[in-house]
Amino acid sequence: MNLADLAQALGAELADTATHPSGVVVTGVSHQAAWIRPGDLFVAIRGARFDGHGFIDEAIERGAVAVVGEGLPPRVRCNVPYLTVGNARAALADAATEVLGRPSDRMTVLGVTGTDGKTTTSCLALHLLRATGHRTGLLSTIGYELPDGELRQPPSHFTTPEAPQVQQILRDMVAHEATHAVVESSSHALAMDRVRGVDYDVALWTNLTGEHLDFHGTMEQYFADKAKLVRRARHSVLNADDLPWFERLVPLATADGRACTSYSAEGAGADWRAEGIEEGADGLAFTVNTPTGQGRAHLPMVGRFNVANALAAMAGVAATGVGLDELVEGLATFPGVPGRMEMVEREPGEPRVIVDFAHTAPSLEKALTTVRVTTDGALWVVLGSAGGPRDPSKRAPLGEVATRLADHAVFTEEDHRTTPLQDILEEMERGARETGRDNFVSIGDRTDAIRYAVGAAGPQDTVVLAGKGPEETMERGTQLVPWAEIEVAREALRLRREGA
Ligand SMILES: CC(=O)N[C@H]1[C@@H](OP(=O)(O)OP(=O)(O)OC[C@H]2O[C@@H](n3ccc(=O)[nH]c3=O)[C@H](O)[C@@H]2O)O[C@H](CO)[C@@H](O)[C@@H]1O[C@H](C)C(=O)N[C@@H](C)C(=O)N[C@H](CCC(=O)O)C(=O)O
Ligand SMILES: Nc1ncnc2c1ncn2[C@@H]1O[C@H](COP(=O)(O)OP(=O)(O)OP(=O)(O)O)[C@@H](O)[C@H]1O
Image 1 (cartoon, rainbow, N blue to C red):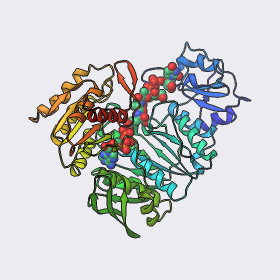
Image 2 (image 1 turned 180 degrees about the horizontal axis):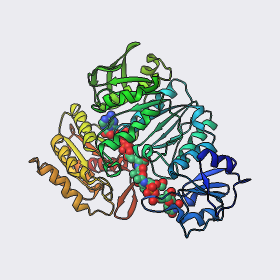
Image 3 (image 1 turned 120 degrees about the vertical axis):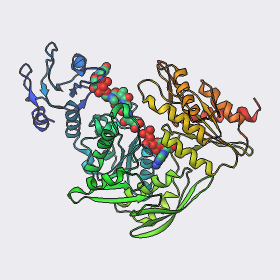
């Protein structure tokens, strides 16, 4: 794309000191100097940790043909055109969207947001679209998929990466003839304009509970950031059980005559309702009532909250024109999501071990409550809480929920980063003690903690390993060590079998 045209699209001003943009052609966009390729535009962002202007030299050395920013600092040299904009992150998204040819305009895009259940709901929607014959791509915490179904990782560990990656992945989907895309849209992404430029057809809202307040500041701001998705989509699918937010979202969703479908798994009045829910050791069954008919659905997943996730996904895919019978049929073949209520293979006489990603007090509460229903013996939970800058107010509530809802809790490490592990464990213990409970032990090493719980659990018991889910690394101090919770669980069961 010609730089002069791009400057006009961005409403950018050319800095006096810079060379003129005429004749300059931009072939890519990046905010990260190390990723610049010849012909790219470098967008210099003033972030919390770095000022991108400090990397202009590196970007130009790598072949940047122009730089965009909110103003060139006095002593910084820039010998390619420098374009000044009011908001660098918005410009990053707009430039990437324009240069990559607005790929989302050529697909039906379903966006999924909420505090809990985004990944599960995204994977459910992906599966339902594919099962009903649509070439579909996915962008989610677990990575991204083109319609070929192979899971790939973008070059940064995000739920929703920065705008240039989002647009590039959508473009790759189009190149692979995807007609549909499911885009998990984190609140950070919505707040930081990473998904600006995504033309959402359907917004799926799971729920909103207190998380990430370290970043958003207040619940009100967190709501406002997430609500951006609902304001933008042509059709919103909203959770009628998620009060008070549901009532505030409806007017935002329906403004300008846009469509809205409500769903409820907990008995509220809604367009899509789940009734007659049966929880089994290996799956869920429920009746789906919709304005156009009724069906009995089977979902091969445990966790009652997955009924709500399934309803959101079904109603979202229905909004793209798929019928209820096909959705019910598709749901029955859902393969599950790695690390979300994932059951570890076991032999007769061994406890059921479940790897789950619940890492907030509300999601842990739901996970333990639902697993209890199908547990004949005792319920165990192994969990930690993140350190570093991550929300420290989560720790005591996690300790409280774990000891209230499980018979035995084992507190352990979970990405404590540079925060002393002992401090985190003491906070979790405080949460338990303050409500008069002492049914916990603290074992700092997570492998030891898992082996202890799995070794001590009886054949009728369930052990929930909460928090790490599918993550492939553990952050200990400043070290990043490889991690595979499911493998640690398998090994713990093997040691138990051998009586070690
Ligand atoms: C709060 C947040 O999301 N911050 C992100 C933001 O940081 P920032 O604006 O402070 O930027 P910065 O790190 O100071 O860097 C400024 C600029 O200099 C550039 N730079 C920096 C260093 C360098 O060597 N070269 C270079 O070019 C950077 O690319 C950037 O453009 O932009 C950075 C560049 O993309 C991100 O690395 C950083 O993610 C941080 C590390 C992060 O952990 N984000 C998490 C919390 C996040 O986004 N999570 C959500 C999911 C949450 C959930 O639902 O669980 C997600 O969508 O993944
Ligand atoms: N609808 C729901 N309500 C409450 N808890 C849920 C719901 N769905 C899933 N969970 C719990 O939250 C955990 C994370 O699920 P999932 O990965 O689908 O959510 P997420 O929103 O993508 O989370 P994250 O943003 O942290 O990746 C699950 O392992 C489960 O314990």
